[in-house]
Length: 638
Image 1 (tube, helix red, strand yellow):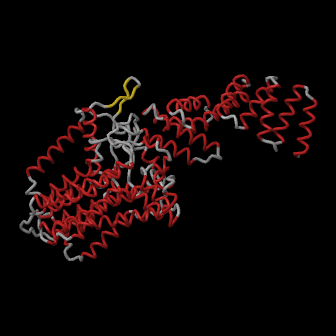
Image 2 (image 1 turned 90 degrees about the horizontal axis):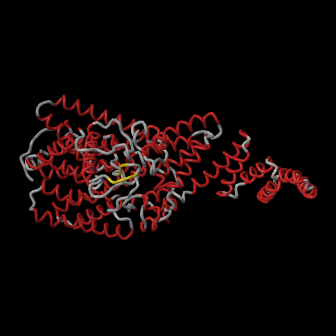
Image 3 (image 1 turned 180 degrees about the vertical axis):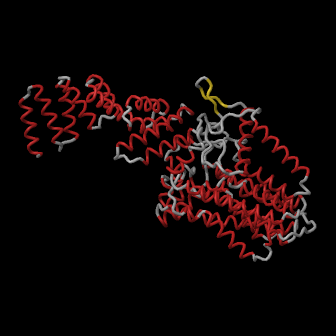
């Protein structure tokens, strides 16, 4: 599209060389996230790095990464892959993590460093790509195109909504996907202009790498030709002929993914943590109807727009019921519909007059569509990381708005407001980065925002239990009580949340609330009969409750009952065997006491205490022969 040049040396950037602008953008982007370099592994880093057996094998694990679902190395069982809807095939970031582990071991510094460098390179690629397109389209003079491209990249770099991706090493998949997609965008345009084979080969290979990073790169199969139709004078036929080549890596990726990932994208799980579109009716989980689901999805679009406009209350967690069921009468839904309708009207009525505006809206829509829940469930209502790619459209729209103000003569005011915006964005980004230091900081901070998220409440409770000093009973009592509050909220929101019931049982057991802990462990096993942690912890709870009944309440019959339940679940626990021997002994059932103490000495053949208990049981029976025999053993052990 060739149009008359509109001259306006926006922000007086024309005097800066391209190399200087590249340096400014790289340094700015790097410094924004420099305070993440001392951060630990956190959140989903366990899935793709620290607890992923393929990644931990270093480069020798790469063939397994390429040949399996991305989460198999974490779950270690194909059956457990069903816990995540749709499956995942994103091998490129895991290959990167494997190389990092091979070179540096499990050292989060290098993961964070590489993330920040990749992000800075992405910002440069955005500048380079937009500058190429705007200069070719000649919507403005070269100086303005240069300034617009720079400021869009700057606004994108500073936006706080990107912290979830850049500050979390796992977010490397998002960065790589966006980086390679923009490389494909750039070289596709070069191919359109020059028809050089090397350009199209780079474009196709880059898109394939983007898809291997994350599936949403496929949106560029639409975005690239759409941009060509808006910004060039080439015929529709020529554009579609050249852009259709992008289908080659797209189809290749889809075929590879279908062959490796067994879980179908269309499957709708009946578990709230994998399907947010469930509601509880008469104690049963049922699916939203179509109207309820669509209204709730539209609400999330409104939330995305709010986060882009005012990124203040940020959180990593929007799991159920943080968003919850929405209806068409909800004010936010109505307002969002009005905004969407207005934008669509402007796109179709002003597409020739405002091509950059049109591109920003269509780019946003195309890049967020795959993660919108409209086509298939993505496991959560929304996530800030889902805005990583779409937010470029918002950055374009933002800078375009400031440009309009600038050209209307409000130059000083425009510069001042834009500068303040970048400063505020940067301050928020740097501040938000600190929250991503570790799991404890992240979960206990964000739970104050995601108050209705069962997952976040569960994560906060678990993080508190993990961090508390297990050697200080006062701390154990106070912190486990604090964790209990979060975990009770989690099971209140999601009554069938097995993981939360398990952790709640742990919090209660730490406080000596044995009966309540037993109920939680039994509930966990009802929901997940094969849960080994719940089974072993329930045995422990039975044992400790039995000990409490015997020692504190002198309820030896009740103690015996609890201890027998514990023994049935874990017959190899020496303390349970000892306590059963004691329980039978104090009830003068010395034959049973001998039975259990004989088992105990087999388990602890070098324990004087075990043999002394056995001797006492034989003494209760008046069996002098065995008393003397055991005494001889005790003497030898001294």
